[in-house]
Length: 409
Image (cartoon, rainbow, N blue to C red; front, top):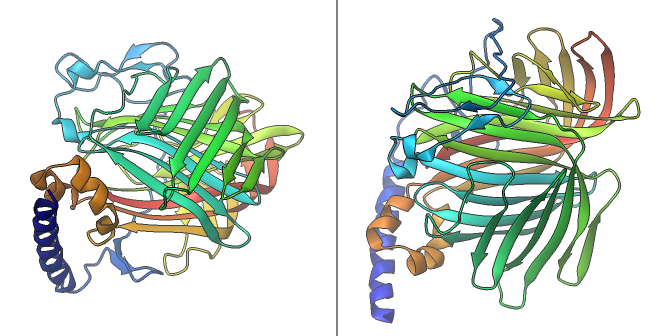
């Protein structure tokens, strides 16, 4: 067994060396490429034009797909009305992606809880970040084989990730999401444990269908109005999330192309004595019938059309700016912390032990093509938003985040 694993490692090492040489031999930048703050060559995410979209709203339950696998709908809803029959999907299994992700935060700490299956592997991950010190206190991803996690096709059923004695359990109650987890760190005596209660402050949220083609799509359900309460225990330290702590749900199902890029932002806080939350984003698919942009205030979604992002990839901690094409939002975002993660060919080396334990040689070579490049800034929003009735609200020090992601999967 040891000899076999050693041979696998040698083959993988040779493969990585060859691929690294090939990567280093790449030519000049193309017109749409730039070198960012970390020296990474990235493709610029073009700004959306300012022409208005249709913003088609669905108000009752509707089938997402036709029997032939083509899309039946494209648009948005205040509730997760879109029903998926996964047997209608014609794409190869590795193109179908499923996840349930929560980003939680207050002014001092933040983090993420993720359970996902990207078609050729599945995983559970936990992050805990400290903004003032700039430290990543904990970050761990545990890999399992695809299909090892049971994903419901709706947003209300529970979901559980398990691997040995490690787990992430997400229970659903009326108006609440109860999450508990225990994940081992790099050593056997290093474990992070957490218990959260996410209260849905608003009944309304953003369910959006974005097509890539007639049959490829992303169905996302973004719930940015979650009140976060709970405790994380790690290395004999206790991290409490009580007052002014919030979270956003990112629930997704879809058949994706191999390479993608996106921008996503969310935030929450009190404005005029009421909770105001936001969800913004673009960068993939065809948004002609619905964008990802919306404000939630007093429990109601105020849908926005397009929002243009202005930010400096040579310094992600410089101020960002967000402007609506209809004059309904103008926000300046000042980062206080940057989460930077680059899982490329060399970055996958850190997962070799897990890959060898769970996957065949041919599967490993395929998985080594996986890339995920993230710059996620946490900070404060200041500016204004305009509600559906024309009311203009001043936004002051609304905490949240904005991220840029490049993905190959």
